[in-house]
Picture 1 (cartoon, one colour):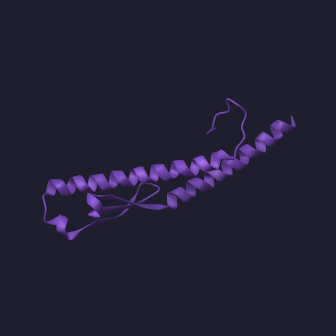
Picture 2 (picture 1 turned 135 degrees about the vertical axis):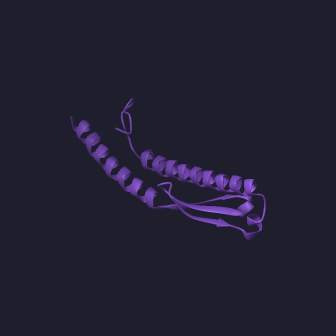
Picture 3 (picture 1 turned 135 degrees about the horizontal axis):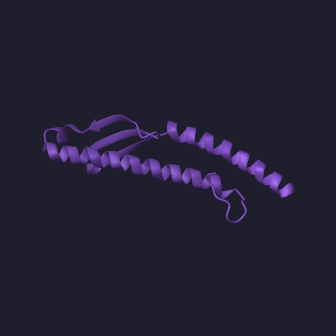
Amino acid sequence: MANFGNMMKQTEALQRNMQKMQEEIALMEVVGESGGGMVKVTMTGKHEVKRVQIEPLVVGEDREMLEDLIAAAINDAVRRIETESQQRMSSLMSGLRLPPGFKVPF
């Protein structure tokens, strides 16, 4: 029964740490880029776009190309958020000792 008590304490600590991690991820900002940095998109961990920067040289170019560069920069920012989130969650879970077959999240 003592093992179950320890497991419950670990589970509660994990839930608190996951909540804290989710809050940190929501507050983080990443910059996605395309066109070698010609278009940059700043996005929060909540996937909210905060800023779009476009080099002046690109503005006068083909509109379709500009649209593609913006979409690519947004997609790059989303990938960066997902990668960072996975890395943070993975580091959180690495120290946890759960019995085989125990599923997380709960």
